[in-house]
Length: 342
Ligand SMILES: N[C@@H](CCC(=O)N[C@@H](CS)C(=O)NCC(=O)O)C(=O)O
Image 1 (spheres, rainbow, N blue to C red):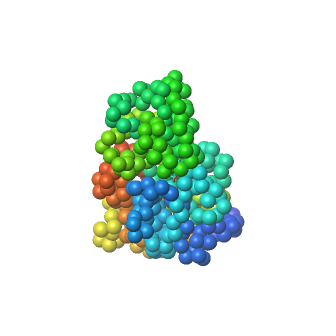
Image 2: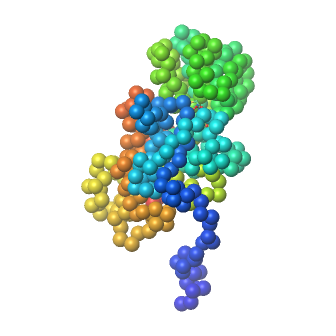
Image 3: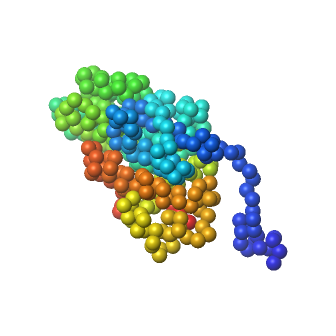
Protein backbone atom coordinates (compact mmCIF):
# COMPACT_ATOMS: atom_id res chain seq x y z
CA UNK A 1 0.00 0.00 0.00
CA UNK A 2 1.47 3.35 -0.89
CA UNK A 3 1.59 6.27 1.50
CA UNK A 4 -1.32 8.08 -0.12
CA UNK A 5 -3.71 5.18 0.37
CA UNK A 6 -2.38 4.46 3.84
CA UNK A 7 -2.89 8.05 4.74
CA UNK A 8 -6.48 7.96 3.55
CA UNK A 9 -7.19 4.79 5.55
CA UNK A 10 -5.41 5.62 8.78
CA UNK A 11 -5.27 9.38 8.84
CA UNK A 12 -2.28 11.59 8.21
CA UNK A 13 -0.74 11.04 11.64
CA UNK A 14 -0.16 7.37 10.94
CA UNK A 15 2.24 8.03 8.08
CA UNK A 16 4.54 10.46 9.74
CA UNK A 17 2.56 13.64 9.22
CA UNK A 18 4.66 16.46 10.56
CA UNK A 19 2.82 19.51 11.82
CA UNK A 20 4.22 22.85 10.70
CA UNK A 21 6.82 24.10 13.15
CA UNK A 22 5.11 26.25 15.75
CA UNK A 23 6.91 29.12 17.42
CA UNK A 24 8.86 27.95 20.43
CA UNK A 25 6.47 29.46 22.93
CA UNK A 26 6.29 29.67 26.68
CA UNK A 27 6.85 25.97 27.36
CA UNK A 28 10.37 26.20 25.91
CA UNK A 29 11.02 29.50 27.68
CA UNK A 30 9.92 28.04 30.99
CA UNK A 31 12.11 24.97 30.50
CA UNK A 32 15.07 27.19 29.65
CA UNK A 33 14.74 29.41 32.70
CA UNK A 34 13.95 26.53 35.07
CA UNK A 35 10.79 27.79 36.76
CA UNK A 36 7.20 28.88 36.11
CA UNK A 37 6.37 32.52 36.84
CA UNK A 38 2.81 32.33 38.08
CA UNK A 39 0.47 35.29 38.58
CA UNK A 40 -1.58 34.73 41.73
CA UNK A 41 -3.98 36.69 43.92
CA UNK A 42 -2.48 39.88 45.28
CA UNK A 43 -4.58 40.16 48.42
CA UNK A 44 -3.91 36.92 50.23
CA UNK A 45 -7.17 35.24 49.29
CA UNK A 46 -7.08 32.38 51.77
CA UNK A 47 -7.84 29.03 50.16
CA UNK A 48 -7.11 30.26 46.63
CA UNK A 49 -3.81 32.16 46.66
CA UNK A 50 -2.23 33.24 49.91
CA UNK A 51 1.21 33.51 51.45
CA UNK A 52 1.91 32.54 55.07
CA UNK A 53 4.25 34.37 57.45
CA UNK A 54 7.18 32.25 56.26
CA UNK A 55 6.52 33.30 52.66
CA UNK A 56 5.06 29.96 51.55
CA UNK A 57 2.23 30.15 49.02
CA UNK A 58 -0.78 27.84 49.10
CA UNK A 59 -4.29 27.57 47.71
CA UNK A 60 -6.38 25.96 45.01
CA UNK A 61 -4.99 28.36 42.40
CA UNK A 62 -1.44 28.00 43.70
CA UNK A 63 -1.86 24.23 43.25
CA UNK A 64 -2.33 24.78 39.51
CA UNK A 65 1.02 26.61 39.37
CA UNK A 66 2.57 23.77 41.37
CA UNK A 67 0.97 21.11 39.16
CA UNK A 68 2.38 22.78 36.04
CA UNK A 69 5.87 22.87 37.61
CA UNK A 70 5.54 19.21 38.65
CA UNK A 71 4.54 18.32 35.07
CA UNK A 72 7.36 20.30 33.43
CA UNK A 73 10.21 19.79 35.91
CA UNK A 74 9.08 16.90 38.13
CA UNK A 75 9.31 19.47 40.93
CA UNK A 76 6.29 21.41 42.19
CA UNK A 77 8.56 23.87 43.98
CA UNK A 78 9.89 25.34 40.75
CA UNK A 79 7.45 28.23 40.76
CA UNK A 80 7.97 31.92 41.35
CA UNK A 81 4.87 33.84 42.35
CA UNK A 82 3.77 37.30 41.30
CA UNK A 83 0.90 38.65 43.41
CA UNK A 84 -1.47 40.61 41.15
CA UNK A 85 -4.43 42.87 41.77
CA UNK A 86 -7.59 42.58 39.68
CA UNK A 87 -6.48 45.50 37.51
CA UNK A 88 -2.85 44.44 37.02
CA UNK A 89 -3.37 40.78 36.22
CA UNK A 90 -4.07 40.97 32.46
CA UNK A 91 -1.28 43.45 31.57
CA UNK A 92 1.13 41.26 33.59
CA UNK A 93 0.24 38.25 31.46
CA UNK A 94 0.11 40.17 28.16
CA UNK A 95 3.52 41.74 28.72
CA UNK A 96 5.19 38.43 29.60
CA UNK A 97 5.84 39.42 33.21
CA UNK A 98 4.16 36.13 34.15
CA UNK A 99 3.89 32.86 32.20
CA UNK A 100 0.38 32.12 33.39
CA UNK A 101 -2.37 33.43 35.62
CA UNK A 102 -3.90 31.22 38.29
CA UNK A 103 -5.88 33.84 40.12
CA UNK A 104 -9.64 33.54 40.61
CA UNK A 105 -10.11 34.80 37.07
CA UNK A 106 -13.40 34.34 35.26
CA UNK A 107 -13.36 32.97 31.73
CA UNK A 108 -15.58 35.23 29.64
CA UNK A 109 -15.99 35.65 25.88
CA UNK A 110 -14.64 39.19 25.89
CA UNK A 111 -11.54 38.31 27.91
CA UNK A 112 -10.92 35.33 25.66
CA UNK A 113 -11.34 37.34 22.46
CA UNK A 114 -10.23 40.90 23.22
CA UNK A 115 -7.36 40.54 25.64
CA UNK A 116 -5.06 38.24 23.68
CA UNK A 117 -5.54 35.47 26.22
CA UNK A 118 -6.66 31.86 26.16
CA UNK A 119 -8.63 29.91 28.75
CA UNK A 120 -9.53 26.24 28.63
CA UNK A 121 -9.66 24.54 32.03
CA UNK A 122 -11.90 25.59 34.93
CA UNK A 123 -10.48 24.81 38.36
CA UNK A 124 -13.40 26.33 40.30
CA UNK A 125 -16.97 26.86 39.11
CA UNK A 126 -18.22 29.89 40.98
CA UNK A 127 -20.88 32.59 40.87
CA UNK A 128 -21.25 36.08 42.25
CA UNK A 129 -22.84 36.52 45.68
CA UNK A 130 -23.54 39.11 48.35
CA UNK A 131 -22.35 39.46 51.93
CA UNK A 132 -24.15 41.62 54.51
CA UNK A 133 -24.00 42.13 58.25
CA UNK A 134 -26.53 40.00 60.10
CA UNK A 135 -27.56 43.23 61.78
CA UNK A 136 -28.96 44.50 58.48
CA UNK A 137 -31.72 41.90 58.87
CA UNK A 138 -31.89 41.02 55.17
CA UNK A 139 -32.47 37.44 53.99
CA UNK A 140 -32.41 37.87 50.21
CA UNK A 141 -30.64 40.06 47.68
CA UNK A 142 -34.08 41.13 46.47
CA UNK A 143 -34.45 43.11 49.71
CA UNK A 144 -31.39 45.23 48.91
CA UNK A 145 -33.09 48.11 47.12
CA UNK A 146 -31.38 51.41 47.98
CA UNK A 147 -28.28 49.69 49.41
CA UNK A 148 -24.72 50.98 49.07
CA UNK A 149 -22.78 48.12 47.49
CA UNK A 150 -18.99 47.78 47.77
CA UNK A 151 -17.34 46.38 44.65
CA UNK A 152 -13.82 46.13 43.23
CA UNK A 153 -12.97 47.70 39.86
CA UNK A 154 -11.44 45.65 37.06
CA UNK A 155 -13.58 42.60 37.79
CA UNK A 156 -16.58 40.92 36.23
CA UNK A 157 -18.38 41.86 39.44
CA UNK A 158 -19.28 45.43 38.50
CA UNK A 159 -21.23 44.58 35.35
CA UNK A 160 -23.05 41.62 36.95
CA UNK A 161 -24.09 43.90 39.79
CA UNK A 162 -25.49 46.52 37.44
CA UNK A 163 -27.31 43.87 35.39
CA UNK A 164 -28.85 42.18 38.42
CA UNK A 165 -30.16 45.36 40.02
CA UNK A 166 -31.48 46.58 36.67
CA UNK A 167 -33.17 43.27 35.85
CA UNK A 168 -34.90 43.31 39.25
CA UNK A 169 -35.74 47.05 39.10
CA UNK A 170 -33.78 47.72 42.30
CA UNK A 171 -31.95 50.94 43.10
CA UNK A 172 -28.40 50.80 44.47
CA UNK A 173 -25.36 52.94 45.02
CA UNK A 174 -22.12 51.36 43.79
CA UNK A 175 -19.08 52.14 45.97
CA UNK A 176 -16.15 51.21 43.75
CA UNK A 177 -12.49 50.79 44.72
CA UNK A 178 -9.44 49.65 42.84
CA UNK A 179 -7.87 47.64 45.64
CA UNK A 180 -9.47 44.81 47.54
CA UNK A 181 -8.06 46.16 50.81
CA UNK A 182 -10.03 49.37 50.20
CA UNK A 183 -13.23 47.42 49.58
CA UNK A 184 -12.67 45.40 52.77
CA UNK A 185 -12.05 48.54 54.81
CA UNK A 186 -15.09 50.36 53.40
CA UNK A 187 -17.34 47.41 54.14
CA UNK A 188 -15.96 46.95 57.65
CA UNK A 189 -16.37 50.62 58.47
CA UNK A 190 -20.01 50.53 57.37
CA UNK A 191 -19.52 52.74 54.30
CA UNK A 192 -21.52 50.21 52.37
CA UNK A 193 -24.26 47.78 53.37
CA UNK A 194 -23.26 45.02 51.02
CA UNK A 195 -20.03 43.41 49.74
CA UNK A 196 -20.30 41.70 46.39
CA UNK A 197 -17.80 39.46 44.59
CA UNK A 198 -17.37 35.77 43.68
CA UNK A 199 -19.01 33.67 46.38
CA UNK A 200 -15.72 31.84 46.99
CA UNK A 201 -14.06 35.22 47.56
CA UNK A 202 -16.77 36.17 50.03
CA UNK A 203 -16.21 33.00 52.06
CA UNK A 204 -12.54 33.82 52.21
CA UNK A 205 -12.94 37.55 52.93
CA UNK A 206 -15.56 36.88 55.63
CA UNK A 207 -12.98 34.90 57.59
CA UNK A 208 -10.54 37.80 57.41
CA UNK A 209 -13.00 40.27 58.98
CA UNK A 210 -12.71 41.08 62.68
CA UNK A 211 -15.97 39.29 63.57
CA UNK A 212 -16.79 36.77 60.83
CA UNK A 213 -19.87 35.57 62.71
CA UNK A 214 -21.47 39.00 62.40
CA UNK A 215 -21.67 38.57 58.62
CA UNK A 216 -23.69 36.32 56.35
CA UNK A 217 -23.68 35.40 52.70
CA UNK A 218 -27.04 35.73 50.99
CA UNK A 219 -28.40 32.72 49.07
CA UNK A 220 -28.57 34.32 45.60
CA UNK A 221 -25.91 33.57 43.00
CA UNK A 222 -26.33 36.17 40.27
CA UNK A 223 -23.79 35.10 37.64
CA UNK A 224 -21.62 32.33 36.27
CA UNK A 225 -17.96 32.71 37.24
CA UNK A 226 -15.97 29.82 35.82
CA UNK A 227 -12.53 30.47 37.31
CA UNK A 228 -9.48 29.04 35.63
CA UNK A 229 -5.90 29.57 34.54
CA UNK A 230 -5.14 31.84 31.57
CA UNK A 231 -2.18 32.04 29.20
CA UNK A 232 -1.30 34.28 26.25
CA UNK A 233 -3.16 33.32 23.10
CA UNK A 234 -1.57 31.41 20.18
CA UNK A 235 0.69 29.54 22.56
CA UNK A 236 -1.08 26.23 22.30
CA UNK A 237 1.67 23.93 23.61
CA UNK A 238 1.73 25.95 26.79
CA UNK A 239 -2.06 26.10 26.93
CA UNK A 240 -2.04 22.29 26.59
CA UNK A 241 0.39 21.84 29.48
CA UNK A 242 -1.49 24.22 31.78
CA UNK A 243 -4.89 22.70 30.94
CA UNK A 244 -3.79 19.07 31.16
CA UNK A 245 -2.12 19.75 34.50
CA UNK A 246 -5.58 20.57 35.84
CA UNK A 247 -7.21 17.67 33.99
CA UNK A 248 -4.61 15.26 35.38
CA UNK A 249 -5.68 16.24 38.90
CA UNK A 250 -9.34 15.65 38.01
CA UNK A 251 -8.56 12.38 36.21
CA UNK A 252 -6.62 11.14 39.23
CA UNK A 253 -9.67 11.73 41.38
CA UNK A 254 -11.83 9.90 38.82
CA UNK A 255 -9.41 6.94 38.92
CA UNK A 256 -9.30 6.98 42.73
CA UNK A 257 -5.59 7.79 42.66
CA UNK A 258 -4.32 9.93 45.53
CA UNK A 259 -0.88 11.11 46.59
CA UNK A 260 -1.02 8.37 49.24
CA UNK A 261 -1.98 5.32 47.14
CA UNK A 262 -0.10 6.41 44.02
CA UNK A 263 2.75 3.94 44.25
CA UNK A 264 0.33 1.08 44.85
CA UNK A 265 -1.66 2.24 41.78
CA UNK A 266 1.39 1.99 39.51
CA UNK A 267 0.93 -1.80 39.81
CA UNK A 268 -2.64 -1.58 38.45
CA UNK A 269 -3.62 -3.69 35.43
CA UNK A 270 -6.06 -1.04 34.22
CA UNK A 271 -4.53 0.25 30.96
CA UNK A 272 -5.96 3.76 31.49
CA UNK A 273 -4.34 3.99 34.91
CA UNK A 274 -1.07 2.50 33.64
CA UNK A 275 -0.98 5.05 30.83
CA UNK A 276 -1.84 7.86 33.22
CA UNK A 277 1.00 6.93 35.54
CA UNK A 278 3.50 6.41 32.72
CA UNK A 279 3.68 2.63 33.13
CA UNK A 280 2.46 1.58 29.67
CA UNK A 281 5.15 0.39 27.28
CA UNK A 282 5.83 2.65 24.28
CA UNK A 283 3.37 5.33 25.35
CA UNK A 284 4.06 8.88 24.18
CA UNK A 285 1.39 11.02 25.86
CA UNK A 286 3.93 12.86 27.99
CA UNK A 287 6.37 13.26 25.14
CA UNK A 288 3.64 14.57 22.83
CA UNK A 289 2.82 17.23 25.41
CA UNK A 290 6.50 18.17 25.58
CA UNK A 291 6.82 16.45 28.98
CA UNK A 292 8.09 13.34 30.67
CA UNK A 293 5.90 10.19 30.78
CA UNK A 294 5.80 10.65 34.57
CA UNK A 295 4.19 14.11 34.25
CA UNK A 296 0.84 13.08 35.74
CA UNK A 297 2.47 10.83 38.36
CA UNK A 298 4.56 13.79 39.51
CA UNK A 299 1.51 16.06 39.73
CA UNK A 300 -0.44 13.60 41.88
CA UNK A 301 2.59 12.70 44.01
CA UNK A 302 3.47 16.31 44.79
CA UNK A 303 0.18 18.19 44.58
CA UNK A 304 -2.51 15.51 44.98
CA UNK A 305 -5.67 14.88 43.01
CA UNK A 306 -8.31 17.58 42.51
CA UNK A 307 -10.44 16.38 45.45
CA UNK A 308 -7.42 16.39 47.76
CA UNK A 309 -6.48 19.89 46.66
CA UNK A 310 -10.08 21.09 47.06
CA UNK A 311 -10.55 19.64 50.56
CA UNK A 312 -7.14 20.82 51.79
CA UNK A 313 -7.48 24.37 50.50
CA UNK A 314 -11.14 25.33 50.53
CA UNK A 315 -13.15 22.30 51.67
CA UNK A 316 -13.58 20.27 54.82
CA UNK A 317 -9.87 20.33 55.70
CA UNK A 318 -9.74 24.13 55.55
CA UNK A 319 -11.29 26.95 57.58
CA UNK A 320 -13.51 27.83 54.58
CA UNK A 321 -15.47 24.54 54.63
CA UNK A 322 -16.89 25.07 51.13
CA UNK A 323 -19.00 22.18 49.81
CA UNK A 324 -17.95 20.53 46.56
CA UNK A 325 -21.24 21.62 44.92
CA UNK A 326 -20.65 22.38 41.23
CA UNK A 327 -17.02 21.37 41.73
CA UNK A 328 -17.86 17.75 42.48
CA UNK A 329 -16.82 15.26 39.82
CA UNK A 330 -19.28 14.80 36.94
CA UNK A 331 -19.85 11.26 38.25
CA UNK A 332 -21.15 12.80 41.50
CA UNK A 333 -23.44 15.41 39.99
CA UNK A 334 -20.82 18.16 39.58
CA UNK A 335 -19.08 19.77 36.61
CA UNK A 336 -15.47 18.67 37.10
CA UNK A 337 -14.74 16.40 34.13
CA UNK A 338 -11.40 15.49 32.58
CA UNK A 339 -11.25 14.63 28.89
CA UNK A 340 -9.69 11.20 28.34
CA UNK A 341 -5.95 11.05 28.89
CA UNK A 342 -5.08 8.67 26.10
N1 LIG B 1 -13.68 36.38 39.17
C1 LIG B 1 -13.80 37.81 39.04
C2 LIG B 1 -13.36 38.56 40.30
C3 LIG B 1 -11.92 38.29 40.63
C4 LIG B 1 -11.31 39.28 41.62
O1 LIG B 1 -10.33 39.96 41.28
N2 LIG B 1 -11.85 39.34 42.83
C5 LIG B 1 -11.37 40.23 43.84
C6 LIG B 1 -12.21 40.12 45.09
S1 LIG B 1 -12.26 38.46 45.77
C7 LIG B 1 -9.91 39.92 44.15
O2 LIG B 1 -9.49 38.79 44.06
N3 LIG B 1 -9.13 40.94 44.50
C8 LIG B 1 -7.76 40.77 44.91
C9 LIG B 1 -6.88 41.88 44.41
O3 LIG B 1 -7.26 42.67 43.54
O4 LIG B 1 -5.74 41.93 44.89
C10 LIG B 1 -12.99 38.30 37.85
O5 LIG B 1 -12.26 37.49 37.24
O6 LIG B 1 -13.08 39.48 37.50
